Amino acid sequence: MHALEDNSALGYRFRDAGLLQQALTHRSHSQPHNERLEFIGDSVLNCIIAEALYLRMPGIPEGDLSRLRARVVNQDNLEQRARSLGIGAHLLLGEGELRSGGADRPSILADALEALIGAVFLDGGFEAARTTTLTLFTESLAHLDGQGGGKDPKTELQEWLQARRKALPEYTVLTIGGEAHRQVFAVECRVAGLGIATRGEGRSRRAAEQVAARQALDQITQAGTA
Image (tube, rainbow, N blue to C red; front, side, top):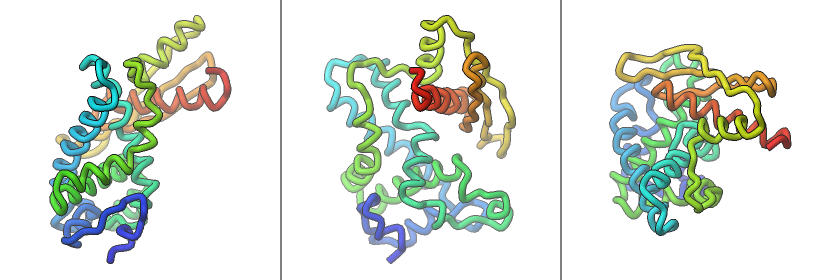
């Protein structure tokens, strides 16, 4: 049995061990790698979280449901869930990615978690994927306020600063990496009036900005200024 299957947070035992290995194989290592499973997992994850929100929050309009889902399904949260499973220690990476710290890279960890969900779906069906996903994201769903506020982090940060008459954050693209069809953006969010500068990564500039804004909000909360 693969060590990852012993992790109680995963809560699923694969019938086809090859699917689990593929989910943990980065394209830099070998074929078959996890990109196709990631594609499946992304769709399955969004569907399961959308259904969970729909059932938990009756009467919430579509726009707010979409924003709430984005607070659950984003690179920052996927990375955290991947770390909780210890996925980085089990990733199969090429030598170049190993040397550059790929096992600790947020985008690689988030992609691997999606691939893992896709593998569970293909191995055990939708119910198995739902059970695994809801187990992994129980805490994230519990943190939502359920009142339809569901604002994305950039909006939440901007409104918090405006309410206190502070300068708005500035977002700067630091790097754009990856291949043309799989670019990874790194963005800095700087809140000059509070001395905060955070970094976020995502597959689009907007996604990276949202991650950086969420980290800025977290710093504000931790500092007790919220």
